[in-house]
Amino acid sequence: MHRAAIPVIEADRLEADGIAALEEAGCLIVTGVAGRGERERLRAELAPYMERAPVKAGNDPKEFLPECTRRIIGLVRRSEVVRDWVMHAMPRRLCDHFLQPNCDARYQLHLTAALEIGPGARRQLLHREEDTLPYFPLPRPNLVLATMWAVSDFTADNGATLLVPGSHRWPKGRRPREEEIAIAPMEAGSVLVWLGGTLHAAGANVSDDWRYGVILTYSVGWVRQEENQALAVPDQVARELPKDLLDMIGHTTNGLLGISDRFSDRAPEYDGIMEMNR
Ligand SMILES: O=C(O)CCC(=O)C(=O)O
Image (cartoon, rainbow, N blue to C red):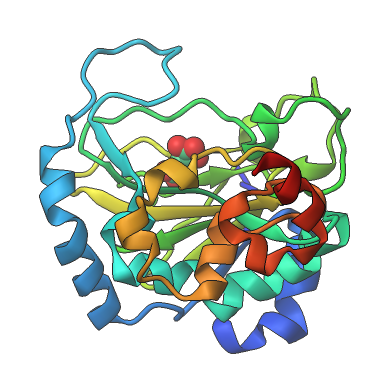
């Protein structure tokens, strides 16, 4: 069987080749983004939480999360490396291109998750990041851009992500044939990027190793974030974060959305509303 393929580029070719490739395929592997030191720091920062996360049990083929997997969310609170990755120039350049034109004001962090896929995990059900935002017919403007940071190597055997190139342009009911499903093996330090309309799933793990990845997704600022960052990042942590990261997680207004009298200094146009509320 001749399988579909996913475009692969080195990080320094993003501008020249990456944007067009992602536009066309709806998915892209960018190699050489995160160094070994960062990945080791990330593992150390998240280890206390990952070790406590339950490994999914049961064997229900309809469950979204397959058995033998574990995941945690709330990564901005827990990891300085994740904070750097959220604000990394590579995903932001792609968000500038794919999300910003569809924003009233800005794009935002949508979800953070660290996930491990263990030996014996089955293939996940194919889905789209934008399945939670179903109010526009497919194909629709890009609302979400997803990144998967390979903390370990991703291989065809240990559960590398499966994607359907081109499916970001498909109508809703179209299902892929098996040969249209591509596998995204990548070396640790690479980042898989896909658009919110692209069908994808975690692969089955038929190896003896655990596959470790971090998903960071972004959305247009006028939809509700998949992960409630205002609750995920408590005040005592938020106080220490730089303003650009705070803006990214939602401590700012987004056009007319998201006002709070806690940042009236940053949104002078709301002074009147603030006055009424005093
Ligand atoms: O783990 C993967 O490769 C993809 C996971 C995913 O898409 C999800 O859990 O939403």
